[in-house]
Amino acid sequence: MIEAKRIFIFRFSDDIELMTGQRPNCYWLFCWKYVAPAAMITILTASFVKIATEGSSYEAWDKETATTIRQEWPDWCHFVIAFLILVAALWIPLVAFLEALGIHLLPPEEPSWFPAEELRDFHGLMPHKVTDIEKCLFCMKDDAPEDM
Image (cartoon, rainbow, N blue to C red; front, side, top):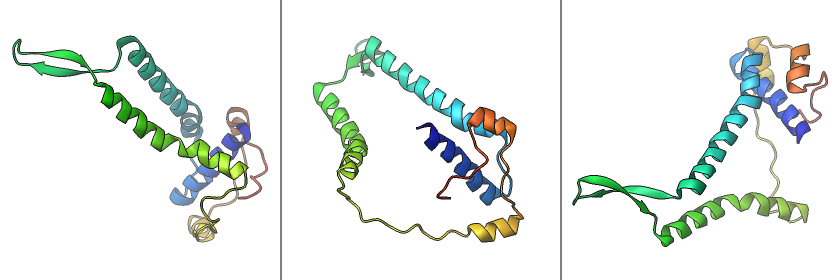
């Protein structure tokens, strides 16, 4: 997992550099690697805590009192929500499980063409030398990932 994150941040930085001609600085790398995942986990956890403490409800207009009142969702709504979440999310472990068994749902494809060399020439880019800060903060190594 750590190796995958290291390779991702290395490749992502290379891709940004190819597109813009400038490598993203440490601020952006730090945000992409640490701040954004922490924010997403915090929001997800807060949402689960709110649902666990307050329940899932909605506000409906009450014409008698001319105010809004909280009402619980009907049971069929909970079923639809669970169904939609499961249909979208179960493919991830299902495909991983089938791949582990050697069953391939989709035929392997060749990577599509991308003008990486032309972009390097256009922007005058040289291979990136990993800095000490990148080594410390982002676990980058001097060697590029093997399959780049």
